[in-house]
Length: 343
Ligand SMILES: NC(=O)c1ccc[n+]([C@@H]2O[C@H](COP(=O)([O-])OP(=O)(O)OC[C@H]3O[C@@H](n4cnc5c(N)ncnc54)[C@H](O)[C@@H]3O)[C@@H](O)[C@H]2O)c1
Image (tube, rainbow, N blue to C red):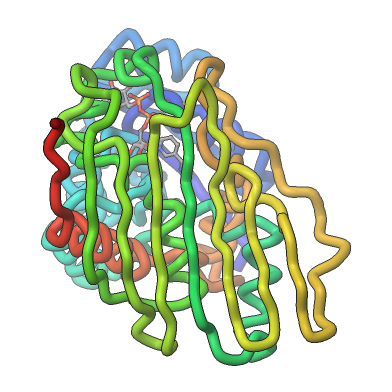
């Protein structure tokens, strides 16, 4: 099957532009129309991308030609838009995080099954060449026993970022720093090594006191369920002025490998028993939003995968179950976290 896939988008903000751009560039995809509760924004977006502006989400969902809806609304709204779309017989490509509650993810999965529709979750860092190279080594069992996995995420999110969209920094619609900034890294951890047990965590809001309703910095220790290995995650959005690092370092029986750069986009170092990762294609640039940098700009691969999967040509890169597991791990972390009070 090689059917043209008709997309619609709900939520016409920053990330929606990545979806629209790559839908337009794909030979076998088309953006039929969009909806946003901010009518001016929605109309400007529809003009820019030459598609219909629907006056209501219902009108969008009643349009038979639409195959799949890209859900690009704030995190705390993903489940509502997704449920309505699935129950209207559309497939869904939901932005990360899939939602901010495991129970909502379960409802989304049930609706996908009940309506026999596909539910994709955007996890674009899986496509990064270094991540794919390590995934292959793990599948080929090259690394031997895994001893330790260490994740460091040191980014900057400033006042302008949080003031740009009212939902950012709120508990109800953003959910937490692990959901919005660092779920990418938890997803790659889960993709490479499977599920984890979180043992303890310490979090604090070091310098975003007036801007966010949750922590900006955290440290967690965990173990890998499928390996006899220990792990740690250290993260912060308080790196001075700019994003500095987004890395996963693996200590294993037959290799030490650091997938690094700011977005898991380079191999920073490696020593192996004769299977060094070499000749990787260049990673895409990051999503640059002007005064802050997002994660890797791999939405091209995400859209390509959705079109191919809906045509039965390849499996879904990140399915709804993967999305749920990431939310479950983040919930586990926040449940275990101890707040360090300011002194
Ligand atoms: N994959 C990535 O790298 C990546 C990058 C940035 C954002 N995101 C995710 O994308 C989503 C959107 O983020 P953003 O930065 O584009 O936010 P944004 O604030 O720029 O855009 C959100 C849009 O949704 C609209 N909206 C809000 N509630 C709505 C509703 N009920 N119905 C219709 N429209 C509604 C807003 O008016 C706004 O235009 C978030 O879930 C975020 O976590 C993912």
